[in-house]
Image (cartoon, rainbow, N blue to C red; front, top):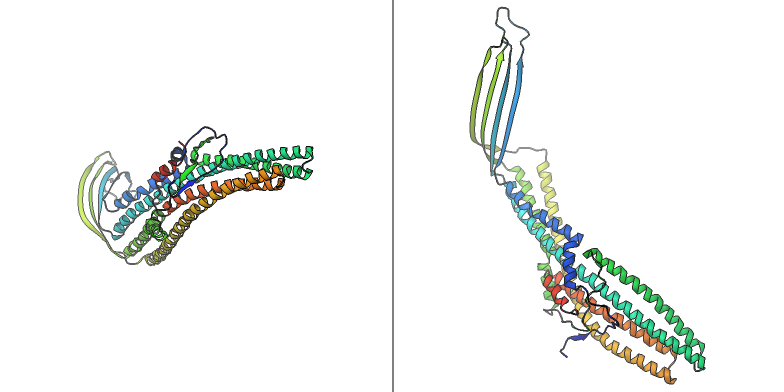
Length: 443
């Protein structure tokens, strides 16, 4: 047997037919999970920041049109003069093109838009990794609940056999009623634990349903012999460094800091002049009549203009300086948030690395403990039969074996999750890791 091969000795009596495996469950979750769908929509919205930022550098074209009816009524006239009352209609339209030539705030906003897209990409990458972790956690919690239920059922069966033996021995006079009462007490406790395990299994199945939209009665289980390897590289410092530089959350917060830096420049641009190229093309016409129905001479004018428009801000009530101070404070906040995110990523990497290494050691120790617990139970059963052990010794040995089985199963699942968390902390968790874990399941 190669070094590092760990035997998962879970009692799986009467295992049901195989169902979905981890990879299938994950793909179901990709298409159903509401939290992931929300993250995807947020990412799609974030991609629109780039064309919005670019728009500030491109020309703006607008059109306007008008029509007006005019009534002129001269109520006071100089005697002897002609009636000059008139009614006429004026019409016009105008096309305007404005091309920014120098608007520094628009250039800064364009830079912010590119960073916003990078930030959205990083957050969506984190959402993908979170989905892998949530699916794997929910999947293994179902498997663990199944293992606990089966262990409870096996323990109940074993205690039931011991209870029957105690009753027979009491009837023939080789044991006291105390043995029967002790076995009955343990049997009642085992029955209660079995009911609790059944309830816990249903809860875990519903938790998996929340992510996938399906209830899986049967899930592919871990093979009885699984090889759990140490982290590669097997160096905590390297994982911490990878987390500090490669975590998607760190990348997102780094983009937020750079956005805050550009926001300062953007607000300070409020003191700078702006220069635009403005071109217009328009038409204005008028038609109507005088008071006696005499036609009013019409007009039809076309006009085109091209020019430069310079705006120089002088005073805005202190708003620009206030926004500048606000942007500086928000930049300092973003820098502090980045430091905190890096430290949290490093802590997560350390915890996950220690979770893997200690988990491997626990699995190895519990595997030996399982063998010892089984030997202890066999010895106590034999001793009880020959009269050198009492009933409570057998019951205690059975309980110890059941606890060891549960602890071993939990340690294996916790170690697998810790391996995934370690890769997530470093920002390298992907579907390939799901496939690697899936290869450890029964086929």
